[in-house]
Amino acid sequence: MEDPNEIQIVDATAMEVIARAEIDSQVATAKQYPRSISQAKDKFLAIAGCDPETAESMFYRLPRAGKSIEGEGIRAAEVIVNSWGNIAAQTIIIDNGTAKDAKFVKVKGMCRDLESNVSGSMEVEIRITNKDGKKYNDDMIQTTLKAASAKAYRDAVFKVVPKAVFKKEFDQIKKIARGEEQDFTSRLENVQKFFNSRSNGKLKEKEIVALVNIGRDEFDNIAKGIEDFTLDDVLHLRMIANAVNDGSMTIQSLLDEIQNKGNNGELELGRKSTKKQQPASSNTEKKDDPPAPSEKNDLKNWISDALKYEPQKLEAVVKDFCATHDKESYNQLTIAQLKELKEIINATLNGKGNDE
Image (cartoon, rainbow, N blue to C red; front, side, top):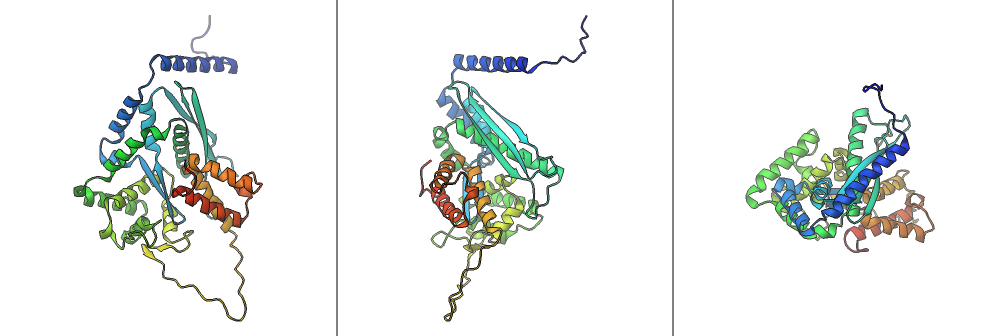
């Protein structure tokens, strides 16, 4: 007689059979109860737009090298999965960063539409060392791993579920997220408290004004102080806060952006740079200084960040550029080529390049 408490060992073949049976059962159920796209859109709007606080959590905004990258965030992907129906999404950890010489964590997100049999996967890799090359402690590695998992999940979902289906709903949700004029003061105070608390007092009024101004030029309405803020500005700050909460950006990287690292002196603490160009010597032509050793890494990191947050829009752009220069990866490009690629990516993100 078998012991009921004895652990039963199931071989790999049996596990594959069980997994296949589960998928077949899910597909059969999906075919029996097909989704209604109109109901899915209504449900998404009802959940994501139930109040301004929930609505603003649907979006992120990332200051990057003097530009701002924004899009639909992790919470939006979660609500879409719930609303779309007949869909399965999950993540698996490829590298948890525990190896002694590990410098990254890597997570793979997978999504399958059980009704249309469309599937997609995305891998997300995030560095677990600081700018000095020192590895994060265990708690910070786990936090980074969770952020990578969330982003991989989001990217996989948006690779399967067309965002175009929900375009009208996203526009409505953004209007809800802006809030009403009577709520402006309280919402601004809340976002100020968030940045002040998370930065231990380093992100004060002057720095918050600088965050709003990143990506603007002399033709935009550059805010001189908080009194110049609009409802859209407060929403943009909340979207940046979402990126911090999701682990897409750190307080230190925000401080670096504010201090003008990588944005070519366009903005400094909310004001246009007034630094004058030094004239070249009239006697001898001064040669350009050689690029700093970190310049190439900074360019590659910037491109990597852009690819992580807009993969569908940028992957083909980067691939075509590399192919033009007979390179398999942008990591093999020269500094001049990386700078050219960065300009193309900026043009694409600003709507001047290839359409998505």
